[in-house]
Amino acid sequence: MLETMRKGAQTWVAKFLLVLLIISFGVWGASSALFSSNSDVVVQVGNKSVSSNEYRLAYQRQINSLSNQFGRRLTGKKPG
Image (spheres, rainbow, N blue to C red):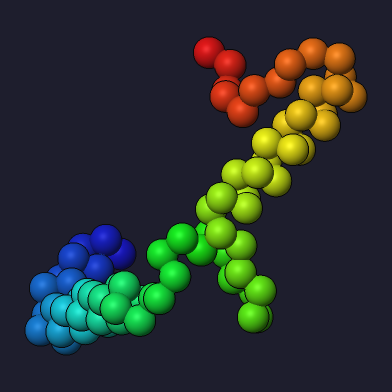
C-alpha cells in the first residue's frame, strides 16, 4: 500500500495538486494580510471586535477575581 502511495505521489497529477494547494494557501494568507484593517483586533464576531488591550484587561480582571476566590495570588504562567 505504501509503495502504491509513493508511486502515486511521483505523478504529475499529484505534483500539480500539491502546487495548487501551496498557491491557494499563499493567496489566502496574502489576502488576509492585505485586507485586514485592524491589526489590534484579537477576535471579531459579526460587527463586535475585541482589541488586544480589552482582552488583556478582561484576562487580568479574571485572574484577580480567581485570586480573591482562592485566597492566594494566581499567575497566568504554567508551573515548572
